[in-house]
Image (cartoon, rainbow, N blue to C red; front, top):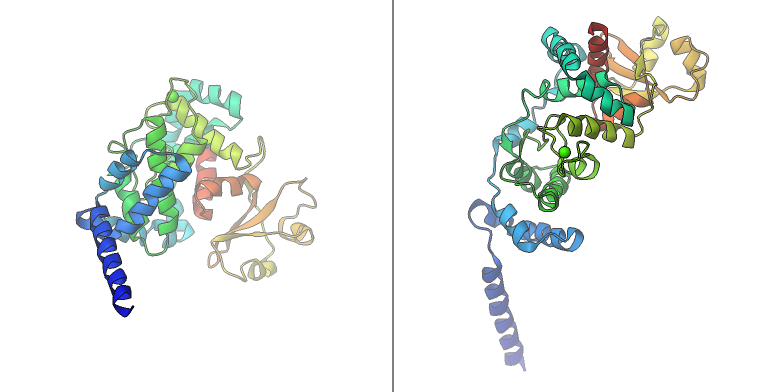
Length: 330
Ligand SMILES: [Ca+2]
């Protein structure tokens, strides 16, 4: 009896060892992530009906870009103060190029505005902050950056795994060559720097040529940003923020839990902080930018919508300010 159990265990282990060696197809640096890659492949097949050979080929093409992991831990939003960040993004050049870009593309911008209702200067400001109006859209193969982050990033691997899956689905369904797709170190693509999930779910083929081109088609680009904002709750014609003056003795109170964030304002505090009794139905927040320099604004729903594009108060504030500067300059 003992012996037969031993035999069964012996043959079973031989069987599994054989199965494993037969199955381990990811070689080189990918081999130690074999199990994770297989799970991704399975998810692509069962959840998105992506052909297994297609997924396998895509995943096997991943080449780790370890420098990305270092860059990610030094992202500028985390270290700059508001003044430094603003100085870096809101340069004279960026403002002037934005004005020029606006003037050169106003026809197409208006065409998209008439459908989606997002003002041209907002679209141009996004392009200015994201890629300096298309002058820099990133040079890293997206399959490599997302592969690296999905398998190696210590804390955000789940998020990037989802993006990697979306990239492969996007390539499969839209006949895009993942080997040609290049983007930022975090996998953002095209002039509006869309991550693969947004590219797949929210990007628009506005010029109706059968493909969504976020590099070459201005109409696709403008419509995709507009659609993103609308889907996140953009309110047509409403303000993004308001400059307010909080009484000196309340400054301590508004910054009591730190800065670089937004905090809701109760109705009771609205008048005290802003001097406004009533601001219609708009959602409002204090945008706390710098405690030491006591820099703050009042934000509305559209400010939060911009933060859905990039969850940084500095980012949203710079987009708002750049759009204002462009509007002033035209
Ligand atoms: Ca198109």
